[in-house]
Length: 352
Image (spheres, rainbow, N blue to C red):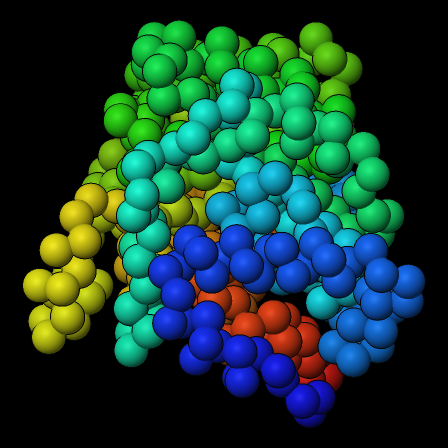
């Protein structure tokens, strides 16, 4: 196992406010990333994913089924670094058509003893045009997905216009696109998941994809973990009947029940926001299995929510997920977690 400097840095980073620590880490990454020979060195230390992990999903070849969930690298700033660390894909965003600051600070909180994060970022975004410009210099050999959402000021009845605008700008520069209609931090956004609102949104996006001659580019929709099963079944039926390429599940949860009783009052004082991390794992897994039970094998599925080890990833893949995503676990375990997960999956694969 390589020496893990994150174990030394984490206590210092965790003394800072979470958003300050995030900005500091990204500043360091952006300084290191362009240095000659640095990303090959990181790749050599972390190890490239075993060829046995490669898979084809929706016509795209992924070097590993492990990818980065949306929300961490919103602006596609560290793609070379993520590739060097061994990720098979990165989901950038959420990207909104126009720049917006997101919600007021503080809006990001961590609970280290439970490996949980609460965020109410609110789609803070540089805007689609700036992100698209950065994507033009993306590294080869790394699949990149563009997670797009509507601006906060855009009424729900005009949401399709925002998704179309962001898609037209971002889609030509990514390998697949994800419609984020499940963040709890933009008022009214989750109502777009209701079947009667979801169908016209998906039909409109598929029409836009055809207009741009991008029919071969996969289009996914990201769902929340707080949907009642009966409603979830109806949503899956709409996704399938519309012809969407796949589903990503899940986003963050509003359910404070995933926090232990001893820490629940503390989390309540932080206010609104979605929870992610280890405590979301079981809730997300229930939703994922419900979706997979109803989803035809022709529709791809990405598992996200509480995944933080090779074992978590293996369970999701065995359940029927084509790909898995991590985020919160990286905050608590550090970037070398990616290599550990790749090696763990490859080792398990080799013993079967």
